[in-house]
Amino acid sequence: MIVPVEKIWKKFQNKYKAINVASLEARRLKEEQGKGLVDEKMNPVLESMRRLLSAKIKFNE
Image (tube, rainbow, N blue to C red):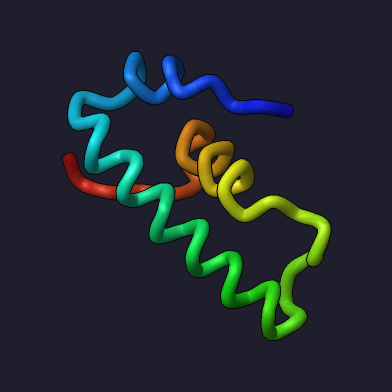
């Protein structure tokens, strides 16, 4: 499933900070993939965007 960026623009006031938080989560997921803790077939960028939109990643705006 592709995550439309427009959903992020509608949900968060500071879209640049939201993208930055998603990228930090993607980096963390990529490191976990390297350690074998997360499925290697998962796309870390898409997964981090999904987590951001589903409020599994929290940050202060």
